[in-house]
Length: 277
Length: 219
Image 1 (tube, each protein chain N blue to C red):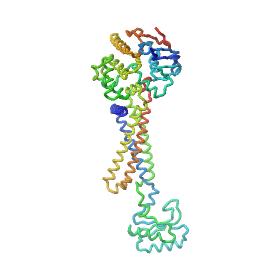
Image 2: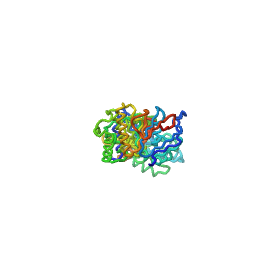
Image 3: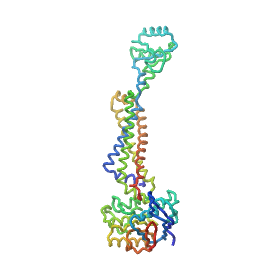
Image 4: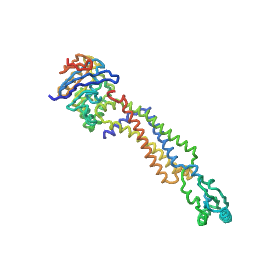
């Protein structure tokens, strides 16, 4: 066994219950941080929510240059179609804030009819574009979250970060104190600082990876076990999304764990770990 | 005989401006047994910290085994520290077996397990602790703890052994036994520098020096 792994094993061997509890809290804080981060990344805003249509809805964006009589004509013609259940004229601001030009929100008799309508309407003069479930909104996956909830997630993100740094200070201080005689002996013997620091950072990285792995496991279980609607709610409509989220969580978990490890390693410069204080 | 330690014009003051070492000159040849005594807080431990490159000097020159301690790179400082066996004042063993204390240090200095065990057994034999190798180090008597500390200082075959106040707290009989051990270490050609508070220990050192008012005075 090389000195690095040997020292890491010896360091783990000195973990006392109190320090272990604090280090577990570090892991829990990282898990909280990663969960909040994943939810934020997977969620959509309320504005994005507005452009989602029901299966049988079609939104027709008309040219702003179109005269009112031409709009009336088009409105009446479309209303007469068999596959149209209802039709409403709306101003752009009602549908998508910041856009101009009138819109026709059409309710088709069925989702299949909505797809046909989309194709038919796209060929009419004066129609800028047609939006419906079968076109853009189908790409919109993720958890629909109101802004307040997203703000709450940001708060949890900050809480998780602060928690893991705080618990890291307490946990690593306890751990290193119980290892202080060994550290002083090694410093007296001419062991490099790098040799002492690396196992502490590794411990932090492992905590981060463990937390990320737990999150990935939880997401995978949710994806595999729950019903499609529940999985959809979790924003993991596809395995691809789940894997992307998992990989990102592992990377950020390792980085955050490394940061926690650096916090721990910074304590090695304390007087109690110096042979000549 | 070649020079092991040469200290010249060494000064050291505390942050409050109190002069602890004031123009210290010291000359120790290879294979010497030197006893440096002085009252508490006279700077004995500080001098050992400076000689072993654990404390950077403020002014003056320190040569150990021909190397200028003040000008060494970090890497060279570490390799010098590996060749110095240092027993700190008030040594407390690690919470391991007696041999576990030694193998822990030796393994982390890059020795293989077998090599570490071999060196550890040799050091324990030198310090008359071989029969206690499997015992809990924290349960040893104060004299045996000291022997273990000396074994730790010796185990990686150092050029120079620095022992900080090893006789403190021992009864005269124990002091005699430890002094005998130190003389034995010296007879194999190792340079040994021992500090203490007692004026005349049963050490029979070749050089007895006194550290008083920041300066080293031959006695």
